[in-house]
Length: 220
Image 1 (cartoon, rainbow, N blue to C red):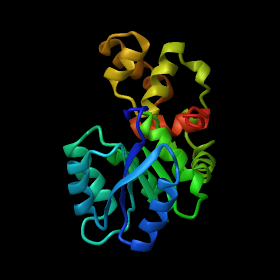
Image 2: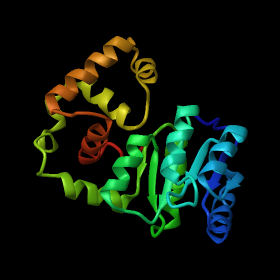
Image 3: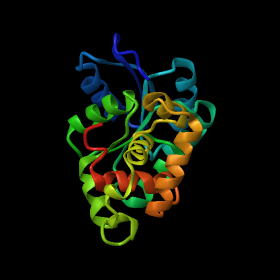
C-alpha cells in the first residue's frame, strides 16, 4: 500500500505518445500524484515496473509485442503485490474477466471522464478495487437475474462472512484480512469457504461480481 505522506508514484504504459502525454498532464496536475516513468509496450512496462517499483501501473491492453494482458500476468508473477489499473477502449465482459483473473485492481474505459482514472488510481493505491462506473452498471445488468447467487442477499451471510468477502473483492489477501479483522488466517479461509458455499461462488471473479451487486465496491 502506498505511503500517504508522499505523492503516488505512477507508471504509464501505452503505445501512443499522444495518449501518454495527455495522461501525464492529467496525473501530474494532481497534488497527490506523480508520473515517474513511461513505457510504450508490455515488455518495457514490466521492465520499468521492476526498476521503479511504482505505486500504480496504468496499463493499456492493445500494445505491440507483449500486450497489456500478457504484461499484467508477467508482472504479477514477478511482483504479486503490483497494483495495476487497466485503461482501455475495450468494454466487453470478456476483457474484464480476463484482466480480473490476471490480477488487475482497476479497470477504466478510455472514453470515460478523466476523473474515473484518478478515482481508480487513488482507490487501488489504497488497497481497494475500482471498476469504471459505466462498466459496473453494465456488469450488474448483465448478471442480475441470471445466476442464482446473484439474487442471494447479503443477509444470507454472517457479519464476518460478509466482511471477509467484501475485503477479498477489494483486493486484500487472506493475511491482510486476518490482520484487519483480528482473526487467524485459517478462520478467514473458513469464513471465505462458508460464504462461497452459501452463495455458490466458484472463485474470485464471482466474489467481485457479487460485491458489485451488493454495492460494496462503490465507495472503496
